[in-house]
Image (cartoon, rainbow, N blue to C red; front, side, top):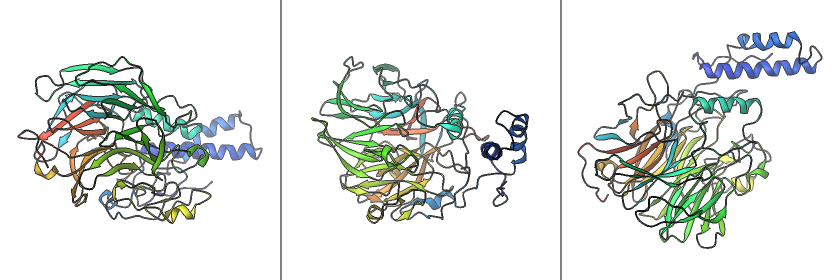
Length: 485
């Protein structure tokens, strides 16, 4: 039996030990049964199921070798890939916020709960009239995703992390009628959707990205309920696997084109490229006809999107691949240009090959674009919002806010915060700044996990928290009216 040595003298995480022990146990048992040493139902098998995990407690996953800061910025450090029989699993248990507590804002910032008691709020759309839409949602049924022993463990870890709740399948409208920074009215704007996520206004309509379709609904300023069943603009890739199920959408400034972010059906094409058709890319959809074309591709899991006003470029936040070490591969945000290919699954950050992917495509790798700005390995950077007109201090006047949902397979953890990347002349111009932290308790539990971010009509930064079931509102300590950056 092969052993796995402790690395760097670090104490292994308990979740890592349990997973590795079980997987090694079942591997040994399968070999012994295949050799005819025992039957599947023998007493020896039952004894080994109990004893082998104990024998294998010395197994552990490797710790990240770099500080997370080394994997953030325009030129991140890219180490050599580290393959392991069992990937590191370090999941923060979902605990929720103790009464009266909030995330911690950076110096000069004030934080309050804009709304609480929500059902897994993930994405936000701030409307021009001051109302705020929140998608209360989670994954649809996916019978072909996370199958087998590994899938069983993934489902257990998702439950521990607070990600296994049923989808509420609704969009809720929140309204602050007395301008005190707290939503005092709540309406179900749309119900009975199919794992909705992205939302945008386009030519007077509300466009919603379900997990399987892009829908248009009639909307008038001030509406609190929409009874229309909506018009299907186009189908979106879905099906029984639908690994990255979230679909985001943003409209062009004139509303004529809808840009739709669609994630891959795997981590690194382990199911073959046949299931990746029309995935790992951003579509450009004609809002009138529903016809679509590939705008940019090779994007493993593109989620948040935002317009940068100086260059008018569309920026996207992308979750990169897992299971090749705690330092690889950094998530990133980047400006898109039509026809650009960003490497997935064959390579990352330009021409860095992923040896797991067979066969390779050297023709595609040769033209793979290096992303503009790394956001840290395994940070799960999902939310993206341009600073726009905001009521935060001048430090946050021009740049992008990023909601980092937090890692599951990095030791130590990364993400679990909201950061700000300053811009100058349409490009990132400095190191990332922490905006909202404190989502992990002293005992290592997740009191919350940030997802979508948005700037509302008052200039406040709003943050959806799908573990704390809240929306946090961030302003300057001496709140004033929103100002032009």
